[in-house]
Image 1 (cartoon, rainbow, N blue to C red):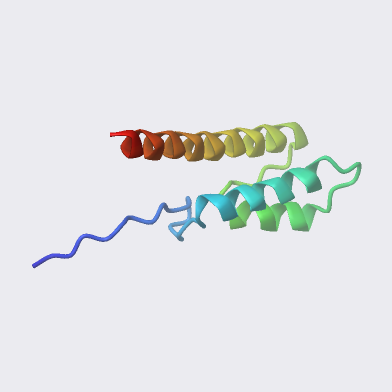
Image 2 (image 1 turned 90 degrees about the horizontal axis):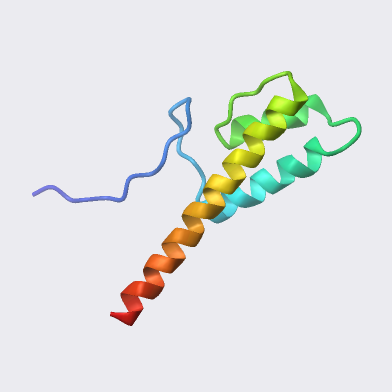
Length: 90
């Protein structure tokens, strides 16, 4: 018999991604750091790697990557909530 287990999403380096809520929190911390006048580069790099994003030197590209990922994670969460509501209605 084979047991089915839920697949854990993976980052680009193959490590497991944190759950969506934790991932959103980590991305929000990263955004807070990126909007500073002088963000700490080591913290930005660490935070980006923690959420599975590739670190880039260009600050505008970094912000774009992070905000796009945050939107994507939030959209997936919203979709799953809508799906749960639909299931409850049926």
